[in-house]
Amino acid sequence: MTSFSTNELIAAYLSRQIRDDDLCFVGVGTNGRAFTLAVGIPLAAVRLAQMRHAPGAAVYWGNLLEPDLSVIPESFTQDAFTRWEAAACPPDTGTKCDMLARRRFDVSFNSAAQLDRFGNMNITAIGDYRAPKVRLVGSLAQPEHFAFVRRPILLMDLDKRSFVERVDFITSAGHLSGGDSRRQAGLGEGGPHLVVTDKAVFDFAEDTRAMRLRSLHPGVTRDEVLSSMGFEPVIPDTIPETTAPNAEELTTIRKTIDPNRILLKV
Image 1 (cartoon, rainbow, N blue to C red):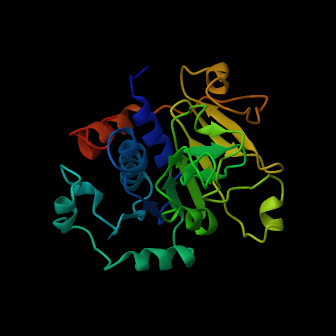
Image 2 (cartoon, helix red, strand yellow):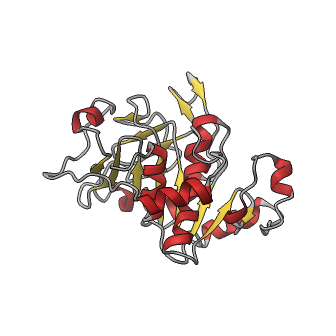
């Protein structure tokens, strides 16, 4: 079997979820693992999709509309973005917000401090909102993603502190309390489509809208997944293995998309 990293596995898996002519929203990350999850893996996935089966797929990354992912900068600084002549740059974030409200995005890549069994997401505060243990970054545009993007995808490392029975604060409304509660609350269709982690992939059951184990990454057991969660997801009778990247995908990622290990380094 060809050796591959977890990041390469996730990037290849996500690339297969991207369809031709999809417009994908990629946000910004800080550094370290947060950057890899929020930016590096999504950009590698979109570029791999462009090169293999979805040449019309495009990215809105930060404030860069349709950057040429074949010429990714060697560093991710503001100066590098400013000089990135291959991208069209809208004048302000109002353009992006308007596009969100008009449902122009097919896919968004999201991450969270907390996520619960019904896909409600928290990036606002840990603990009581009025006197939190930790004050987080705030809503950004995450509520709009779950309201207006067709297929939001969450990228998170599996951990009991992050995968909780109930989030402390709902920044983005997922499937609320399950079933048709989202519709009963007056919200339209939406919420997370997939949750992709370092151990497994999840989706949401059609009837209960509870998180459901979709596949286990190669070498990972069901017990490993369950021990890393604060709740038990829906477990199907048969759990497939997440499809591993093939040799061609790995060569493309390593030699063409990310030869300097900028995107998938952590």
